[in-house]
Every structure is written in C-alpha cells, then in structure tokens.
Image (cartoon, rainbow, N blue to C red; front, side):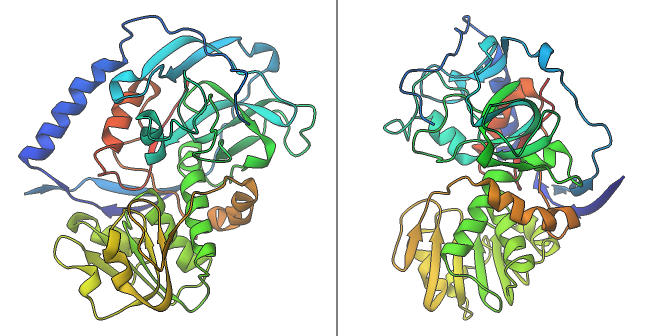
Length: 385
C-alpha cells in the first residue's frame, strides 16, 4: 500500500536551467570507461513562466522482500570508483571490483539503494585527503539493503534482514575505502538499524547521514520542548529533517525555515510555521529571534544575528561566528533505532528529490545534480543491480 502527500514545487524554466540541463547531458558520457578499472583491495592502513512537477513524500510498505543466497555472493562486482581526486570526470563504473572481505563485527550488505551527500563530492575533490583512506575509493555513505552474510561477532542481525545506515562511523576521519555505491558493502553492526517496514529502500537510503546529523545537532544545541528554531536551508537533505525532528520529536513551539520562492509551500507541508523566501527578505532583519539557529548552508556572520541572547547556532559548513559551533556527526545505529517509531508512524518522512531516484549507471549525473545545490531533500540512487 502507498500513501502519497503531494506538494507542488516550481522549477524555473530559464536560460540558466537550460544550460544546466545541457551540462548534465554532456556529463553523462563520463560513465563510459576510457580505461580498465583495477580491482579495489583493502590497504594495510585501511581505517575502521514555471513548470510545477509533483513532489512526493511517500510512505510505502515493502511487499516483495529481496533475498540473496550466501552461496551466490560473487567475488567481483560492479561499483563506482575513483583513483584520483577531482571533478565528476574521475568517477568510473567498474565491473571487476573485488567484493569486500568481512570483518568479525561487520555484516555484508547487498546494496539496494544508496544516497549522495555533500560530503561525498567534497571527499572526491580531495578536501579531506589528510585524513582520508587510501585511493582508490568507492564513494557513498548512506545505504539501504539486505544482509547476505554476518561476521562471527555479529549478534543483532541475520541473513535476510533489511537494514539501513551511514556506513562510515566518522565522516571525515578515516572513512572506509569501500563505500555504498556498489553492489555489496561491508559495515559494522553498530552503525546499522533495521529498515522501517513502512519505508521502501529508496526512502530508507535517503535518511541515515542526514537524520543523524539533524538529531545530533539539535541535541548539541540543547534544543527541547517549547523552544523556537530557525532552519537555514530548510529544503535540503539535513534541513528537511531538522524541521521535522524539531517539531515531531523535540516538541518545538515554533519552526521557521528559509528556502527559495518555489519551495516555500513545500516547507509549510513539512510543518514550518514561518516559511521565509530568502530571495525576497533577509532572515536576520526579521524582528523575531530564535532559541536555536540551525545553519545547514553556511550563512557566516548572518546566522548569529537571528538568535536570541543565550541561544545556540549550529553550523554545518562555512565560517563559524560565536556563539555558533560546528560539529561532524558520528554515525550511530542507536539513533536510527530511536527514531524508527517516528518513521514507521509517518510523523517524520523521508524526502527524495523529485529528479530521482537516479539509476545506478547515472551516478555521475546524480553527482553533477547534487553539486548544483538545487536538490530538494536527498539525491538517491536506486535500484542497484
């Protein structure tokens, strides 16, 4: 069964959008391999006017479970990989990438869906090379899939379980060499949770890194029932979930958020009390101030002008001005387990960008789209063969 909430989101039809489309089309050719991809193996230092398309927030029950026989697990698989840092052009789709070996505390997942995050392309650009794992790299943080093998120390999951999670415990400090944009990936048990039955795999893949970031930021800011919050970048992957968690989980008294003109109604559909069109008004000039400002887009000194005296400003990117603070999320399956009831009930919903899901052979195009900073919610890759 499928329940659909539909909100109209305008996509400007302009010369700039046309050029972006052309750019995406030309970038699609980058998936063609110009040279063979060598097998990826673990390194010794590997660390553990407008057009108005329908935008859908869905709650779908999984009616056809996926099963994979352990005896059918191959030794090689398809995976996206880059052997050097750089733009989208460094991404290649390899067909003979080695399936990762399993550690005692890990499960092997047959990946059904994955999602992209800004950290994916920043890592690919080499912005974290000082603490990164060795190249070559299979990118990808978010995963949803089926357990096909378990390590000797795994007690919580069994073969056949449908799970989801952020597979890198530390986003920037020694993330795995082997990410989720592959047919199989190996992940520590503690980073995962059972997939909510009311969500399909694409929706589940859209959640882990963003919802854990949203939750941890709210906790670190001391957010609690009765407080007010302003979310900067409310239509993005993290922003959509900060809005929902603040309202549904933490008991916010008032939620405000910023977005472009075409996404104001979408913000309201998420439960926003005050939707601010940042193209028409400056949030820092509003007379109303907030207990917490959650800046998901990097507004610099502007964000602290909107917070009450004694309040907190959470900053995910860009410059930090006191009383603002920045943090990098630590992946934790316990957070997902805690939030699963809200996802099961539909009080908190996954938001998949309406341009997706992108098919597995279009990962390069998905990256190009993500890097335009125009995505609504999460850019999801599904299905993965």
